[in-house]
Image (cartoon, rainbow, N blue to C red):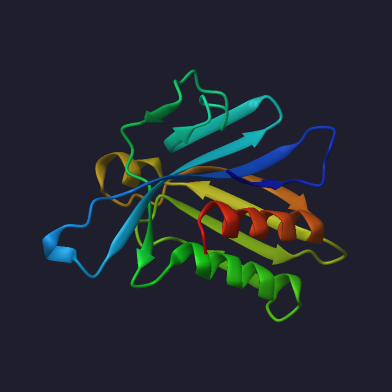
Length: 168
């Protein structure tokens, strides 16, 4: 799992993205590839999970077996446009100072991630879940989320984990 950690070590917050299995390629969409993912937002003792879980449910504390598929449909497009690669690229450009912010919302909008340079130092992260879309297929825009500040090193580590976990 790729884990973005806040700079606050006393009451730590994290955003965790867990890679799941690829969906079977349908004949009607043979030019597309989709991958299931899980998402966990953790802030201190509180956590919210959406989508695919693995590692004995450790991605946020659910009691799960080795692998568990929840009812939610959380997907990243991997082909023709690799959304994970795009996210990693944008974060790297933010770290290098080529961008002032990153706004990422997958084609199947089960969450939104915004990362901006903080006015003084570090980076501000906001992540919002749209469990309505993931559960019913209807995009609702309502959501629950977390806000946190993080460091350049934490962002670089997260990007490296994304590239490794999702092979991009």
